[in-house]
Length: 187
Image (tube, rainbow, N blue to C red; front, side):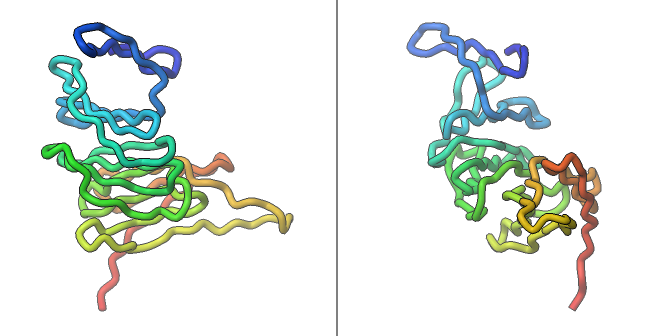
């Protein structure tokens, strides 16, 4: 595989013939590097790095994909995009687990490094799901201060957790980064 000019170009074997594929919308390489997960035109493709062959096509999205991410332990993959659905895939079994409704286009996804949470950048907000209960733990919305009543809120386009899982960083279309601190309340 080679990376050139914002396009991933790879040669894959199909029916005994080598074919080049380009213009992936998103891709990620998990820490174990055994099979990168690639999102392309409504599909999540799982590749075997050892032989550069397609391992699995995950089918289910109805719109193009913006994001794909792999869980810290490498067992799960989550994908999201224009259809507003976050789909979870079992990478060991090669199957769809379940779908979470984002309610808006999903621009970015990331797994928490120390909790069983999935975060989704959905339009101007961030949804945090508890994957065990399949429920929304929180929805983060930034304060928008504008002099115009017609101003659109900035869209969240990127997400990243700190290594300790206590801080969530979010990038927005207004060229600002917002930082969210995790606090767990007691009842």
